[in-house]
Length: 183
Ligand code: ATP
Ligand code: MG
Image 1 (tube, rainbow, N blue to C red):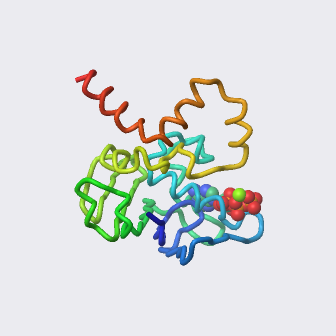
Image 2: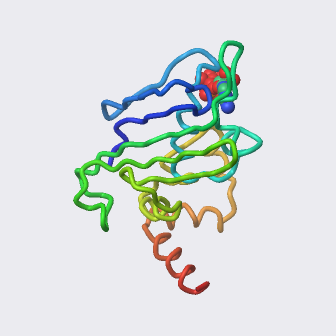
Image 3: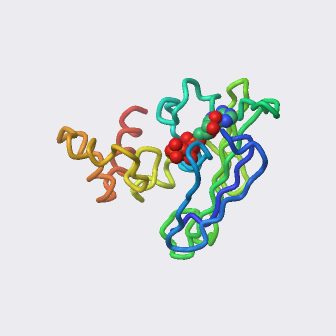
């Protein structure tokens, strides 16, 4: 499974509809301070369901919407769509025979948050379900940010266990059991 490209519009500094390709096994994002490199990673984590504004370096969830600059007015909504190549079939279930998987999140200034899977509206849970056990999620280890290694080294055994369970593919079943028990 590989992230092939991202489409963004109105998200943080990406006010114009933009497409960011990740053409090969390794892509580097370079540029001067404040040009929006970290915003690209924020966009990925946001679509995967990040629900903490602080983890996206803002105060409120609507802070991800472009809030204007000296030359441009603020916009009313932000959207990001991630495109994954699934030809290796890593993503299973109803998505197993899909070569491309598109996951989109959209938020409006009034706080409405919508998710789409291959263009059709879905629940946030449908998105988190897809990635459980793959190592990719809003707080998972597929995205290693500044300070995360030291946080991992210093984490308590219970916190470390969450990462190990994700790597072993156990977290998916634990989540299902938790849901069944709370029904
Ligand atoms: P550094 O090299 O310092 O880490 P960076 O390239 O990672 O910088 P980012 O943190 O991704 O930069 O981007 C910061 C820029 O994004 C700032 O110019 C900030 O004004 C802009 N920005 C963040 N949120 C919004 C928003 N909601 N609306 C408009 N611009 C925003
Ligand atoms: Mg940065």
